[in-house]
Length: 452
Image: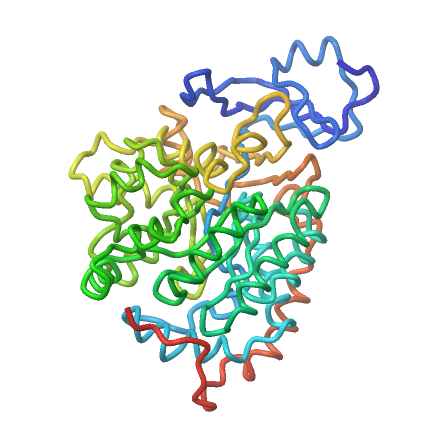
């Protein structure tokens, strides 16, 4: 242990830790020492106080719980600019009548302002990393670099863009991976099997293996897509991905509520690392009949990370809410109150979400050697007292607004609810000026057709 001052010392908190069986546990009255962006030690506060180390920055976190920062495993961050624009519509009308016509208006400036607002919302809600799948991603990468959050970014493409869509996605991924002091990782980002041809999916799989890149896409989003795929191709969307070679890559599948029993053996024998992101609020809103089959996927060892999707469908980027909803909806879907306990929900929100975005070795738990992505949650409010079961309090009583402090790579991005790296009023003012042009649908264009 170094004798020079640590960068950050957090004392007096209860820390969520994982034991060697990955079970969740809580260490009371603990101290976390951070140096060079990593967690150096997690120990008893009294012992650290007695032996040092001195620190350049100290946070007294009495009454608070330290958790690994939450990971939003699938979103379209700049779509916060469309929050509440397309309400109470079936999926097809939502895409064709509102979202895809409006997205044809998007400029880089709209994407930049949307990304700033989204990062502010996520930092305030204890999200320290997000996996984004959108357009003009150079702009999003610049915002990530500036505001200090961690991100897994992919430039989305449709086959209707021609080969340059796929080439741009590859070029983005190669240019930005490892940037922002290592906080940005990248993926190839074909939109979905229903908007990307088999030939483009196969080419993406080859490029991913050749360049050591993961792939992030939407697939089997709902049961209708699976039924349509079976009717058209005799294959489910998951089988389409398998035939294209994508299950040999490190693959992140968004949603998967249309994954059916015949897909399970296909996923089980996948040679790559497959993960699924679940964003339950949107499924409720679209009245989809199913949710992500977490229990079946977990039995195969497939990590399921928590997500919000874009705020145009979800209305929020609140992963805390996704955590509570995932627990509740899984109980309902499985008809079993014992399934998806609060501790399991916390596991999905931390280690499983980190694994889903390919960061399972560096974030997702508070332990020596891990990157210092830490949030401090205040449980002194009336709605979180008394505490009989700390996991249940965190999942079902606490809210994202109880996050007091958000730290990424050892840097404090929010302290006592004050954002330190983003100016929200300025972003909101500038975005308001641009909204009339952004939401105009009088031109009759749309970037794509939803027809599954």
